Image (cartoon, rainbow, N blue to C red; front, side):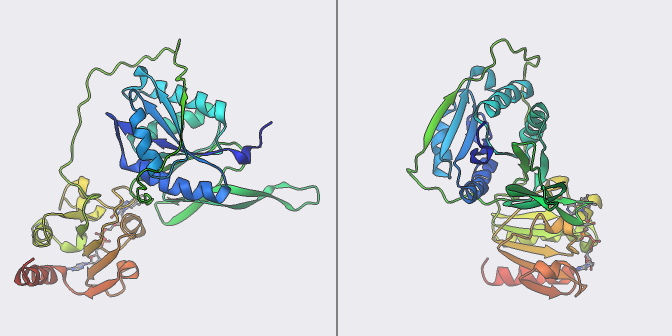
Length: 350
Ligand SMILES: Cc1cc2nc3c(=O)[nH]c(=O)nc-3n(C[C@H](O)[C@H](O)[C@H](O)COP(=O)(O)OP(=O)(O)OC[C@H]3O[C@@H](n4cnc5c(N)ncnc54)[C@H](O)[C@@H]3O)c2cc1C
């Protein structure tokens, strides 16, 4: 039997229409850290049709190996085809860790693969680490708890986000997780960094794939929170939709690349659309500057923005939790302070 602790760390490199999604690079950044800690190779699993050229980008972002499954049947994502090919690949190679993005595709594929392999899956992780786990249920001969070395510690918010749970799967490997978008940092691209490309068969001959995709209709969002270096975000404390609209003026004064985000309470109150929600059930962002206006700083909101490089928080309550993560805090009425900020920026010429 092969030593499972020598198995590779795998990242599912998600692509659509021949373009890798950002989460693939984010996962490679974390995957590199995990693989180095375990002293094993990091492989990216790339599936699709005519996608071999994408391997270069995966190497340049940290993959040692790209495991390519290229087949016309994999051109458009379909659960059964991808699941079948992925399961067969896992059975053949035996990775110890497989991570997917918590995207529409990852959230569909990962549970199907985990179920077929009868292993565990932790969904929507916000951090992954390698560590030891002492299992109180499984005892050694001398009665001491059994120690599992070098297992994947899978962190995610639990109980409505009020605690961060660490979940382990020490026995039924591969250890599998999906990871929220925007949480992990991609490595800087190393131009010319190479690796090993390994082609694998899809093993789809004779497999009945009952779904035929007739048309893909995309709903595009006009809000690009993830790509914005500056985010002005508002919460219930803005008091009304009209007051919330001032945040768009502040974003405009800060330049075209600033975007407006919101807490869930602001979205629920109808101050803006759901596309702008930041947090556990919204988007995860890490802009260079985050200006928080009238947001209390509930943990479910903080998980989506606390990695921002600089945080300015405005709140009337000096004890608001948002001040714990803020680099600069202003205790006061956002409806007075925001117009002053706009005036000051305009006076300085933007
Ligand atoms: C499972 C689950 C998932 C969730 N997911 C999310 C999520 O993704 N994102 C999210 O944001 N929340 C989420 N929530 C909700 C979260 O718990 C909070 O209820 C929400 O973040 C509160 O939004 P808020 O801070 O805007 O409103 P409030 O909690 O009502 O806070 C308003 C703040 O504004 C301040 N304020 C009032 N007037 C002014 C003023 N004039 N000027 C300045 N400050 C003022 C107040 O002091 C207060 O701190 C989730 C909750 C659960 C249970």
